[in-house]
Length: 507
Image 1 (cartoon, rainbow, N blue to C red):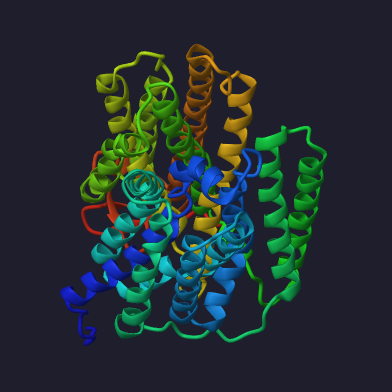
Image 2 (image 1 turned 120 degrees about the vertical axis):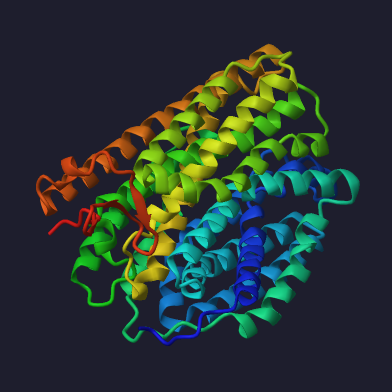
């Protein structure tokens, strides 16, 4: 038996609060300036055309450097990279909050995005290391997932509060004291991970960094100038060439920046794809619904932010429900059910009109979306990290976060183009409403595609289980599934033995 002393509960609580506080600070900055954008035209001299770069510079640096940040965390130590990333983010936030010109704010936003790219991949890996017991780890990952999923809505709420009652600057300056607390406490409560020996794949790092940056830039261009934009097309071609070349390089290098075996599992690969689709739909809720509330229903920035409380509350509420539900139904089946609930909520939201009452026309769809999206993001995080070797936890976390960021970028670019094509930018409320309805219908389609992916994942898991032990699946169909939380796989209890389903590794 193991003689290792279990980590005291109070210490695990401090570690969880520390990582979640930092994670929320890093994630919500993607949306906290959304409600403040009109003020920046007056305060810093932005033009309406250049205003989008307040958001885009952050996304560009974040998306382009995310996998590189994950690899450096594996090599240099995740706690060290996490603390440095938070420190740079705090300094960049101070610079952004004190910005006196548009260029100064944009430079600060680039630094914020780069710092997030290095800090965020280490958060999930540090959280897993700090919670070795299966039940503890499952709860910690659930809370982590809820923070990621609800971060954008929390950012809108906080941004509306600061913009209306204080100043948009406080939405950025608040990161400074939070960052200082993390920098002081992290070396005390977080254990440094073992350094991974080996070289650094410089060629692969450059390829994936430039490729991701080109992809994100192309998506940004499409949201502004359409899919026929020459710059967008050039960016997509460059991104495709670099990604294909990157795969060939990674197959031959001894120290890949992204271990390709992480894609060998149908469970993990399906989780990445479903996450891209789910997050693409989620971003539409935050981005377009906040505009609908202000432009059509004439809500203030603060009231529009507070309107997301039902969604945010359900996100965090799912943390307590996911464990018992997984034990009763299994991850894959619960994922399908959660996506169906989210699809219903989004389809309901697509029926909004120029005079839709906040209750029930907005509140009830948001409650359904909060439950469905909240459960889905938690489950997709767990499935995306299923059976990832400890030494590859940073890379696995980086891929989960990359899928999340890619989903937001792709989803927002596609839906923004559709919104403009449907006349959503028109002056009349009726025309605007038509654009919002189109966006939410397509977002419902994203959820439908994610359901298809989840069904494929469930079918693959069942086939693998039968292939490992022929006939066993039929013998235990009546037994309720439970979960081996440490490995993240569906287990079915037999009378005399426990049998674990493989993660459908190929080869």
